[in-house]
Length: 110
Figure 1 (spheres, rainbow, N blue to C red):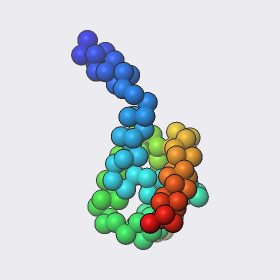
Figure 2 (figure 1 turned 120 degrees about the vertical axis):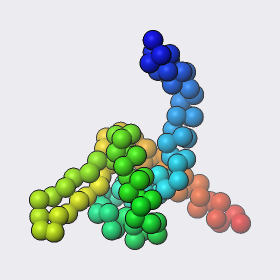
Figure 3 (figure 1 turned 135 degrees about the vertical axis):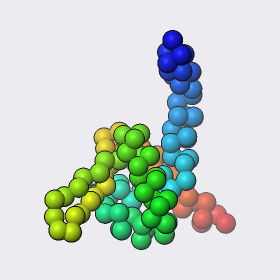
């Protein structure tokens, strides 16, 4: 019964709130931005974002759990791991693109 109550409260949230909670988490929008152009390796993401390996690993794991990012491990020596957006993750790219567009307008007006 508690599970149904919990699900009901989740379903009652405003759709804007749902997305804001996802992309508002630290590093998430930047990770999505980088993955929008295609799969990236951990090191590429870390270099682009300038974030610590531990923080990046934590965020990527959370995004995997939210089914926004998927990880593919290649059986090579040394092993290669790539991260890419899932179909659900790609749904957020127009929002990220619009954030970029509006951000550029704000930069020009200051």
